[in-house]
Amino acid sequence: MKRYIALIALAILASALTVSAADIESVTLSDILAGIGRARAPVVAGKYVVFTAPGNARYTGIAFDFEEYRQTHPFKRIVRRDADGKPLENTLFYIAEIPPETSEINYRMVVDGLWTTDPLNPSKTYDYENGMTVSKVLVPRYEVFKTSAAPAGLVRFTWEGETGRHIALAGSFNGWDPFMYALEEREPGRYSLELPLPKGTWYYAYFEGTDQLPDLANDNRVYTKDGRVASVITVR
Image (cartoon, rainbow, N blue to C red):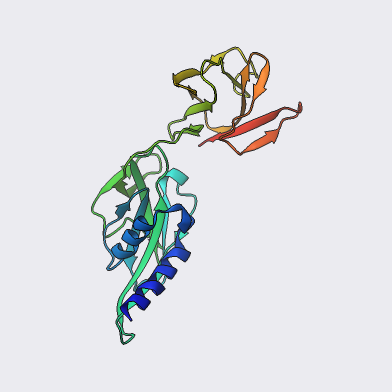
């Protein structure tokens, strides 16, 4: 009976993940499931953070700084029962994937229509840009080799291929000049360049001489007015 109850809880958890359960190692999924009991401060599990709240609220949501608090994610509810079907724990939870190159996540919660810091997390900070106190959780930093924009407006452009190439960057931020910015081969076959850009949406491509090379790690591509295929990066 206990195994049957655990399998039900596992199914509830898998359906509520913000990413596919196939993307999480089975040991991590088991650890996450085992950690969801009574509501407590956020728990880091690999590349994910588990946020919990007491189940007596009708609605609990969460918003993150890396999304500029623009989106509110609803919590899911998990109820653990004993062998007789009697409820043991009623907990609300949300599982968030840690963004790459992030060492701290700031967030706030909404409980039954009222915005608040996380009452179960004593760690808080003041968000001067938005003028409010928010909760924070420290997370393990990891990197992925792909073009990405940091919150401060610094964009890291990356290209991966054969070693010994001469790869340049051009885009809507420099009049599509293919000779202004050169990527550096920082390790065999991996080229990168960090460039500060203002907020906005920018179009870019890589060049070797006059030959245009696609950013294969960025699926966000468009056709420009002059018929050019360009990759897209947004600085927030």
